[in-house]
Length: 371
Image 1 (cartoon, rainbow, N blue to C red):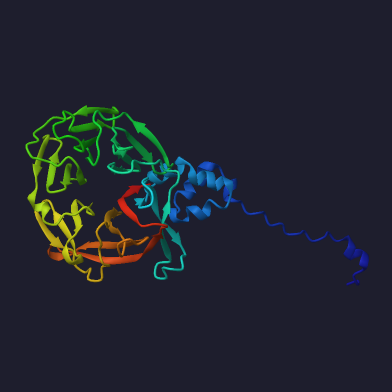
Image 2: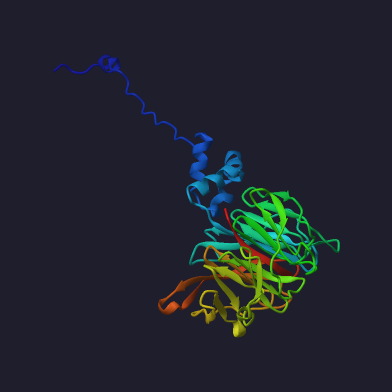
């Protein structure tokens, strides 16, 4: 075999350089595919994703992503809270944000914080009724400049936008309200002798109608708390409890509720949860017609007047202050389990400070919305 010469080596074709194609960026894909991908990501990552690019920020803020989340059943329960500072009359909206990889929650890697929502519309200083339905919040009546109003508006939580509904026939403050069979019922909050003491707003036709019926019980002009169980509206005024049946147009007193029901109550799985004496949580079953204690909560933080409960995706969320005049708002979330014999047991999932304000504040309302 003859020796290789320099010329023979030079005549060989050069080795081809391996070219690795650049990876595709998610932002280079059609927006429909990007929305479908982002809709599968938990909401707690949205703030970080929105910082990646202006495209991501625009898509995260778009209503399309929440429509897609609903279609693929990836919606979440988001807790909204209304706080009224003692230094200002106008209440402010907050939402409970979950921040991943937080340092103050080593067990779950999640930091819970109440974050203000400046884009939400202002609401009356007091007396408004607030009802959640799907991804919307209805704000009904209230007091503005010392006058009761008949206005009603709806907040679309995903887009942080709002729209006014036609006004009620009657101005109201501290009315009971609830949605049953596609109608928003508003009860009281005005002179009990008013011809429009009960009104219903048909969500399909977008019209109000006066509802007549048998109201043979005495209800205080201002109600304190109301919610819907099994298509009936449960109402508490300053002295007594009542149940309104929209189908029958009948309002009746319910003495069984009076024994333990408090302002900070909420409904989970058609049962009423409330604080009782000695910092215990009690549950009322409207079918069995009895109260029973929620077991397993011996280490529950001390409850103060003004605490509020909310159904946070089937879990019990309690917002409270540890002492009077404190600027700190705390939140405790409790998982619930029904065991043999019908006993309900609770487990504290987490408890932490969620916001420290500039001035003491009243917890006006807390409610969960599906988005």
